[in-house]
Image (cartoon, rainbow, N blue to C red):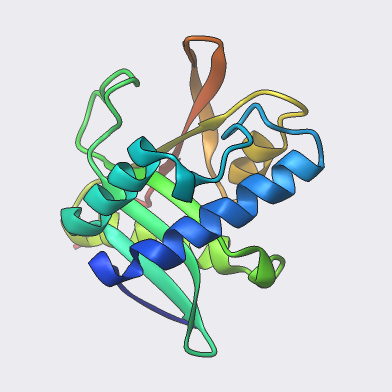
Amino acid sequence: MIIRHGYLGDVPAVLAMFDGAVAWLSSLGRTGQWGSEPFSLNAARVEDITLWAMSGGMRIAELDGRPAGCLVVGAAMPYVPPASEPELYVQGLVVDRRYHGRGVGAVLLERARAEAAWLGVAVVRVDCYAGDDGRLVAYYESRGFTRTESFKVGDWPGQILEARLPAATG
């Protein structure tokens, strides 16, 4: 697996990843996270992903020369309370369903930790959907994140989690 910087040419592949995730979640009756409409048909979602690609924070994981996952890091999202210290925020994470179970998400989250360490910040935060059975929150906990604050955007329940980096020695 290689991880490279994302660019505008990756927008269609990232939209397809989100479309696949939405279709899969919808097939399970789990539309609370991202709804049931494909991202590629939603102008606001297309704009968001395009802005991610232009932000400098998009990372693409490739397996067998094909995009397998996408991580976006940067500043905290505007709907979450600010951190009390410098941080790196995971703005987005999605894995192509064809690569489910191959550790793509875990590798991308490790990349976020490595970038935070390189920047000299001690915390990586992420927010996620906290509804339904809580599986997404449990996933982040299994990757070493701990719950901090719960929040709501309208009726959408969210959870902020953080991963603290080991203290630098030197």
